[in-house]
Length: 152
Image (cartoon, rainbow, N blue to C red; front, top):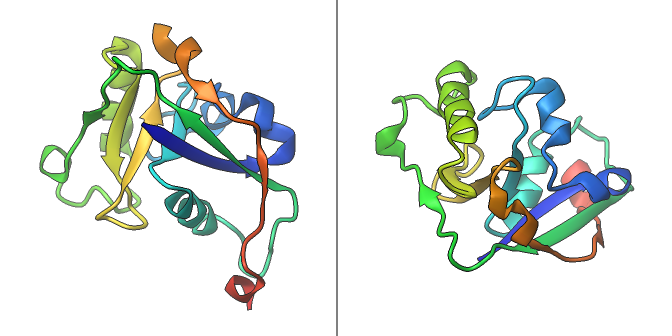
């Protein structure tokens, strides 16, 4: 399975470390808990980043990074029926409890979760503490640019 991330070029070397989101937390993890947020397609990774950008601020230093998950590490899928009814809202605490527990258990390398930006699509959370993290094959970062029309 191939997964995608988009980040600033200066952070490409740590894109699969979980360091960045550990500092502040995210939808699926509390501050202090490392986790890697990725997507099942480059397009979804772009949308996931776009919803967090400042309006009219087009970053000029982005890279996309593709990675291939190791065989024998099937992703677990966490469907909407296993989540709070309003999981896509800004109430992150129930989701953080799920994500933090999953990281601590190390029960799987990855877990697929629905995207809040496109609820019919799937993001992939990667556990950087799982032993199989070393088996992910990360490709070289490639320059990534949003279409300028997205910032008008």
